[in-house]
Length: 123
Image (cartoon, rainbow, N blue to C red; front, side, top):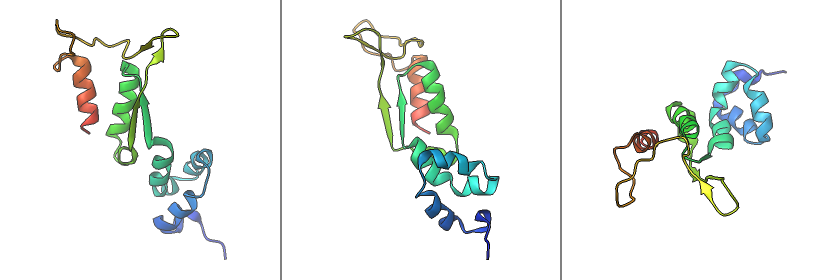
């Protein structure tokens, strides 16, 4: 007797999805909307448990979209902040955002870049 995957309880579909390779989860999400919704937790855990940022505008916008997603945002466990190499000895962070500093060198908490980061992380 054949049973459609979409008619199985979410818990069983999650067990199946939990045994798949990450790439196969991408394909499984395309089966139908019902299956995609049922595997949102294992999919999120596989693809979004660790997010990376270099604190650039583009990178923070990606973080913001994940933070706004009702299901996926709960899957994030780690945030890795890592700049790209500007040279052999130096890494660059947030190169396209104005990271305003005080005269003593500290970041100003009310600057737009800090506000963007703060609101994204508070979601």
